Length: 408
Image (cartoon, rainbow, N blue to C red; front, side, top):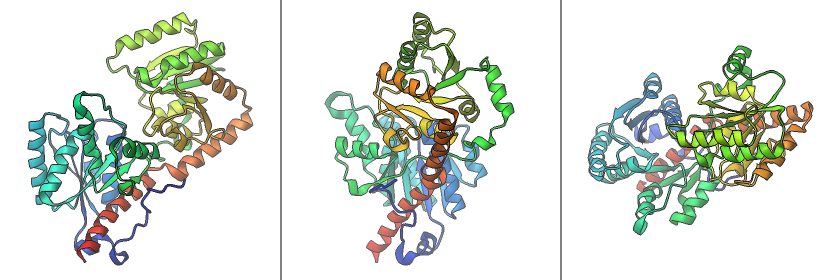
């Protein structure tokens, strides 16, 4: 996929020498984020730390901690616990002082901020110690607020010497909303772990176990919409589309936790009843074995009414050989090949979604197999964690190389 802003994987350093040779020691990267519990930001941070250690660099991560810290320590990376999720200005300043001490004590070369509150602390610490500052722009971020305060708060993500955008959509957003110089942006798409999202690695037993847990009867085509139960994920749009489709020979899984949004869950249950789809639609809560869930499914839907910054679900589904139906905004045009690995539909439009579902259900087995192979190849060629990590390291090398060239 052509990309004007992606740093080349083999980005040159001075004399094509490894940064370790230029520094006389392994380069040190400190990543900062709120916590290491779950999510795309957290997964990317851990994957990068592991890749840095494997590349002979030293990786340090600062956060409030969480279960994913174990993965860091197993890889030989260091974790430092700080209250980095706090938005309290006093705590942010205390965190900045603590990070400055960490940077100095560990001879950190690059500080990489992945979230706004920690980014303010990291930026102040990097400024104080004269270290390189890099950010990853993960989302569009809400700009609503008085006197532009929210926009100013968000703008910290544009202050990196290099700003990594997780999609072209986010790159364009950062330029349009924050006036970010495109020369400082490097687009590095998120990557998934193909050791996990590989159809060949999912045993029949795992699929059967999940089908029994969800009480799925045999002989029905399965449609799945994964994602937490929140209005913008579009569960209600899918329910309305199913009502228009008027087919009871399918089963539909809404897979995701309500995370305390019980009111919205009740709305969905009532909508299912009102549209006479009780036998069709099932709310399953969250799933701890998504690879098996994809294998249990015939087509995966992402009906988000707000633009997705990247769209991890669509990429995971394609990696598992499943066609996808996604809304045509955000980064979907970068992750889905229309007509080849899936279909694009109008945001918030049940009729458009119903038409796409109807097109899928009319496909022959041979046509589905052909789409599956294209989808798997598409993900393996563009959206692996190895590619993501290599391109991110190339950004680090570019920053360090620029410093040596300037000094020379």
